[in-house]
Length: 125
Image (cartoon, rainbow, N blue to C red; front, side, top):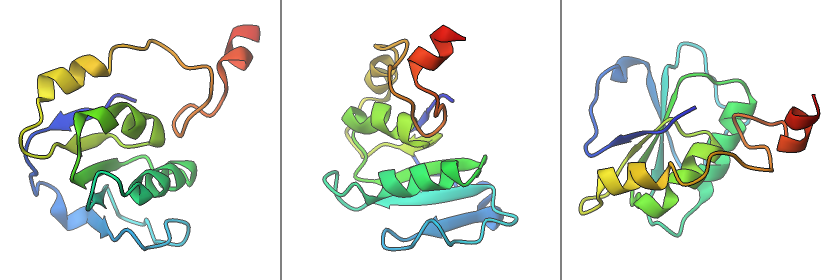
């Protein structure tokens, strides 16, 4: 799954979007009819949204998980591996440079939220 980098937030499809607060339990939120879940980073040092995204993907949510708030390009790779599908960058961040950072690695040894199987299992098969 690739990460869509946005420079501004659009409210398209907001009728089926869920804004999940940082202190909400992602294990128990109802997902019926939801096509997008907005998770917020109030500060770049607050990583609770990473955990929420991971849990939502493991629960089988296939829609858009969007990062908002204090989102830096340094966080994009971890967001992608945690299950985010889009991110709205904080003002002053270079979207083109962020996209370039996502191309530095062509694979990972460990599994992640989207591809749970580790690389050694894929290679052995």
